[in-house]
Length: 234
Length: 111
Image 1: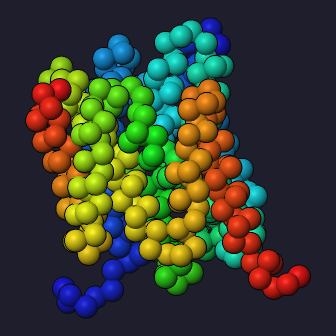
Image 2 (image 1 turned 90 degrees about the vertical axis):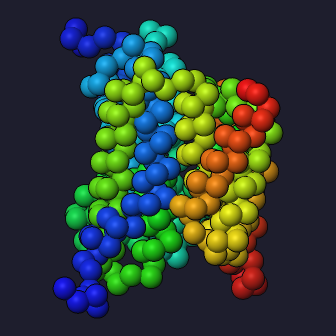
């Protein structure tokens, strides 16, 4: 096969998901699987949380709250912790190309890692290739998450708490690197800094809602600060 | 609901809620252009939420990660960012460098 043969967008996306994204997701979902095992929950619950909820902040809230006997409270907490999915899906939707109906194929896969990769790559791709690239990346990420969760369940007896803690740190570290890459774009710099500045708000509010409040406040202020209509004199 | 215990019910409700959040986002924004102000606002909120999440996860983590000393978390983050910068923006070596620094500092501190 010639090295110049063009790769399909799906395969290109799948290939991009391997490496750092797969490692970061793999270790954090492995740690989650081990934590689920430690809580006495089974494989079905762990895979349901990893593949269905598919957002680590909400998964951890759900795991902690599920044992309280209050399903409504646990659901509200997990939903608030992952409420970023709403603005992420909104920001991603126009870049998915394809038709409005085919775009729904992306629905279960919208999470931080595929979203961040897509927002960097999709604007540079032809419109017809965008959805297939995203599905390639997202499907590999999703499968890695499920496989790592299952391995975490199996490996739980051998994973000591210090190692688990280090593995859990891979997730925020990877996101910090993604933000550093995004921060090279002037348009992204202000929302990133505003989010960091607003983070203390999360300490003052209930844990489940604090992150959403900080993101809303920081993001809205950053948006208003660079709103284009201020420059137009209108 | 007789067949579901509390934990399974919480999981089922959470999965439905996550699909609802994602679906609402696709539904609201699916017909808008990427430069629409609503999309710009949603992008800014997403980025700010993610950066707040990272800041909290490093400075005030919950769960098992809270057992890592703050110095180890900060050095891990700094090492990852420096490796990213020196490595021309390559993510995998930067991630490994950050984790290695975290583990090393944690071992040095005897945690």
